[in-house]
Length: 74
Image 1 (cartoon, rainbow, N blue to C red):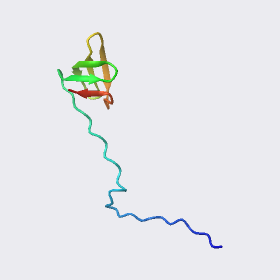
Image 2 (tube, helix red, strand yellow):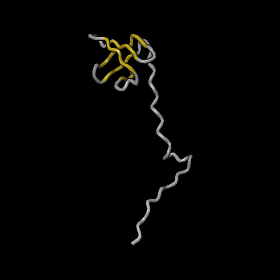
Image 3 (spheres, rainbow, N blue to C red):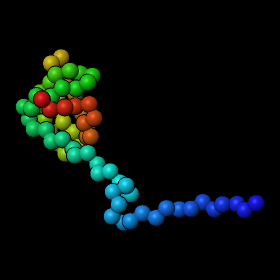
Image 4 (cartoon, helix red, strand yellow):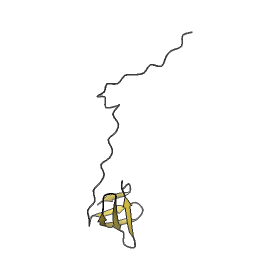
């Protein structure tokens, strides 16, 4: 019996199936933006820097770092 060899498929360099998915855009927040968080609820941005935002959720202030997975702007 003959054994079959695994055949590798060739893809064109411009094929959309070979290209990696682009990263999702990082959302930009500004002071006084109203936001919601899955764990903390509704809040307001009170501080912004390059790597994080400081959000006032009423009873507590929380520093949330990028990529802001559970934080959404309202």
